[in-house]
Image (cartoon, rainbow, N blue to C red; front, side, top):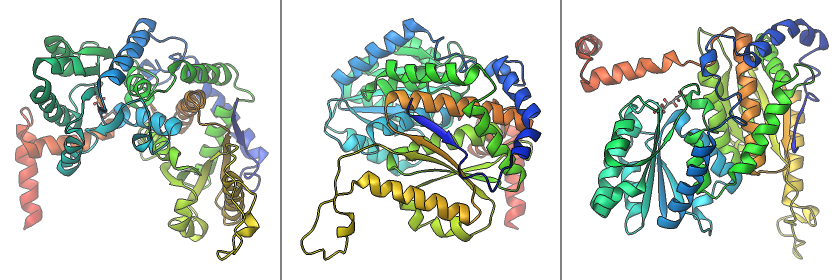
Length: 446
Ligand code: PA5
């Protein structure tokens, strides 16, 4: 296994007494996840998903991915939040953040319907001009506005381009029975996949939600599941000597010491969307009842030149969880005869060697500046590693959420903006809310 977690930088911040003091609490939280008897436990389908997924559908997803690869240049993935972030994180983690620009025999992939920007939509439509296109629309509820609007626009684009044949290019991932997408899939004969009832959006990347786009990008699903299975074996069995348990305890102890912001840091741009996925996982799971760590992210060394100053010397409310991507490379920096740039001291060293010294120097500087570091390391960006890391963070998040005393599987707060938006847009059923919101706006403008 190529993943490790270390407490080597935590000595000054967390003592063995601190760890001992939370052991009972942690054990209770671990047991609630393992035995599926805590609040929200009807959304724990992801716990056994690595071993327990629908094989018939899994094979169908692989076939659909092959069909998409063979029939389009551009694959549009419509979805938002948990129906978007995991697949994009996987693709950038394994294939790099320049996937679309690389020479490859798989389609370019664009993620749409995760904003309400008309200029983004126009750009995507213009990218599709003169190219063959397929769509995967993903929405568990089938009623989310952003992907709903995007699907309406892009389906019409496909129908104009392909007529009746457009239906063969549309793939739907949604609830087995509920929502607006299921009946559309049935009426138009779109191939469809099911988001399991017992898996919430942010825990769904290893379900059909993530699998189709990930497979279209040429990523080996079997390898990804092998990583997730190994993680399930490793983290769900024993409470003792369990890295998920350790991570959950470190972050909760640091929160109790006033470190209320967790920065997920990594040293490779291919981790940017993984960090976005992680932010949703922890933010939506833990941020409720006035509790929770605020999840933020940085990519090094890029952000050392923008946020580095704040991290080093700003408010001391931060700690970092650093995923060090440490992949051996043979990208050697060459000797330059003139040494005009003064960089000959690096000649013969690899770029990764330099990156590693930056990671080390940063960890020492930040811990000196009272920013605790939880150190993680991966030595590959394989599909296996992605499956393993996803499971690690999902399981740790569930334990951590129960330690906070909240339900890590609901997201009641997400409804507040939707209610206002629907009232403003005059959605049927929101008549009273519409009246009230316009009265409120009138008062504000006086
Ligand atoms: O994690 C969640 O539950 C949310 O982020 C949802 O995934 C997101 O709101 C999209 O919902 P849906 O898949 O129903 O369109």
